[in-house]
Length: 324
Ligand SMILES: Nc1ncnc2c1ncn2[C@@H]1O[C@H](COP(=O)(O)OP(=O)(O)OP(=O)(O)O)[C@@H](O)[C@H]1O
Ligand SMILES: [Mg+2]
Image (tube, rainbow, N blue to C red; front, side, top):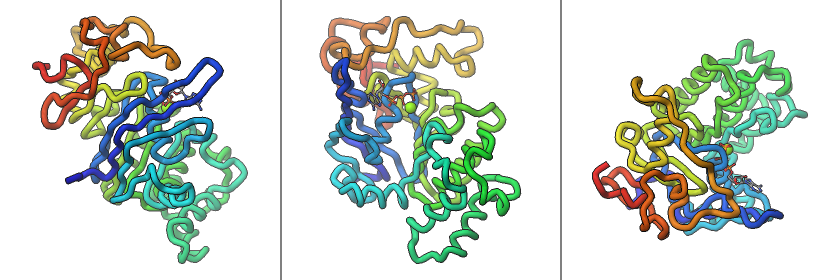
């Protein structure tokens, strides 16, 4: 039985570089359930973006993607041809990229980009109907004067509006799953919450699932039912957000929480995590976090799997299974 919309098993993605092989994603298992918002957090370079670029078939050679399975609506995405994968991307899974300016095509108007997405989703739609839907989409994401703005180019929008346009394009195909990669990093706090509200509304209206990739555990705590914490290419802890934030099991999750002003206890000092993220071409043996971990023991030098902590939670730590 599998109640997941997306079910990633044994995902491994590597890039040959002059400095050696970068194992960017190393054995990731993740599930996204129908209608839920899953937060994916972790420091820069932990493999968040590459995980979902791999799922979407967007890793370019010489990058190499392997997976036991990537289940989505009864299919295994890891076995689809590039053209089958393009169809899934245009219709069932939408993505908004970390950088709106580079993700949007600078030489086409917003109209062209939205209309093309609508036509890819439903080729029987006429130009006129597609244009009407494009205006609706822009209104829906809160672009004022939508009809006139349709003929504008991406650079003619402010940063916040550009993010909205990207959300409009992503949602034009009425996807089952939206992958939102740092949708708000470049935006100020007010606009940030407007874009996130918009994604929440769309999730409810369209009944879609959302993967929200972010550095900000505070945003995850506010918006996501479940969270996956990544470190050095692996998922180190997953579970219902509330439980993970209140009783983190993995020392890395605890470190992240202690380094966050909004979530740490008021009387506790803010503490950065000691040490540095490992060089991805020279990963430590056993637990990747072990060289930085205040609780490391001999056993941590052995490979460690994601272990169940409770029916809904798991952690990649020898402490998992013990009382958190
Ligand atoms: N095309 C590539 N060639 C070589 N290495 C790459 C490539 N793309 C990503 N990497 C490496 O893979 C690792 C994971 O990168 P990824 O972009 O997934 O991190 P991230 O968690 O999304 O970070 P951020 O929070 O900064 O967006 C990093 O070490 C990165 O340098
Ligand atoms: Mg990223």
